[in-house]
Image (cartoon, rainbow, N blue to C red):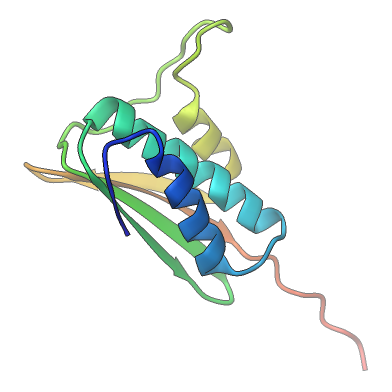
Length: 123
């Protein structure tokens, strides 16, 4: 889904991810939080439209946010009273994997969440 460089785009991204995953469990809650952080970063730092892609299967959920700014993200450490600077720390803490890639005109920041397999019943 293509999104504008507006703060309201984070809400659109949350709905997209929740609808794509199709469950209301903890994995969905985490994915919604993390996509919100990545889209907010794209709006705040890139200031360009962004594209959100969601891939999922029985084993994992992968979400990518691509914007039109080639500057790669940097994890920063701000003071405890700062109102910004925690997004990538949250992504790092809650995702199973995350990363980014870029070229001369854009970058993609992504995260993955592993699905917890259902317990196998003994027969």
